[in-house]
Image 1: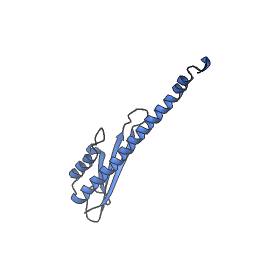
Image 2: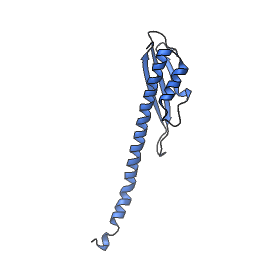
Image 3: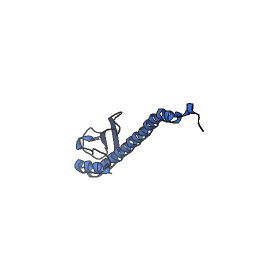
Image 4: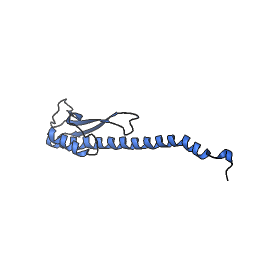
Length: 128
């Protein structure tokens, strides 16, 4: 049995360690969420550039990119998606590469840091 002088020591130790553990847990959650958003943006850019390289239709490519990232909140806007070919135009012509760049501002759940600007990029040869 504990002596009277040691009563409450566990509570004090827990009070000192608990905030550190909570911050560590929140950091892990935020990192996982940011990593998931980055992977989603990259996949959306790949899907958008694939559609653009095959069909040369920006509207279809934007729709495909938006449909690939339904997990983001708020969702992507048309202004988040940019098209550029190697000749500097936004159209896909033969023997050129098309690049689709998606930018997104990720807000954190905790509000401690951020928002963070994230970018997903996909590149593909025009014509499929």
